[in-house]
Image 1 (spheres, rainbow, N blue to C red):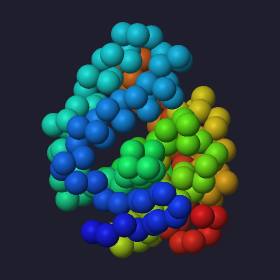
Image 2: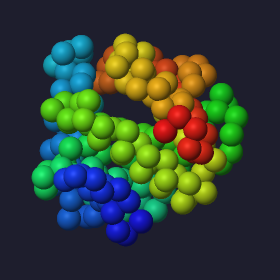
Image 3: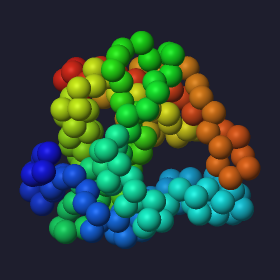
Length: 184
């Protein structure tokens, strides 16, 4: 996937490169804060962000042979990103091999533009290239918009898992789908 995997209008979806680390760090933190800051304490957000985002961490994730980081760019700016990671699959995900969709964010100004669907198609294609039969994810139980989006694209809710944001133990819905074209 060295070349763009999707292009339409002014949208390009491509693999992230080390040179993208600083821009991805800014986008990832801003997107995370935009999605969740209003629902969490300042202290918990600060603690989580300090450990989850940073240029060195992004560089490590981009170069991790078990990870795939895709950038969706519109007009030369990051409009969204997806991060897949080979990791132990939860027992509720019965298909094997499976890959985790660890992060999936679209800039709020691009919601409803179709970028999310295109980025998901690219993520599923990347998972297939990696040999995965299924993609699984955790999504905060109070993020109804994201849960609806994933359901629309064929993800099925199969349980829950814990997620720690700062000192706050939260619950994520555990969802998965086959990598095949169904629902995408």
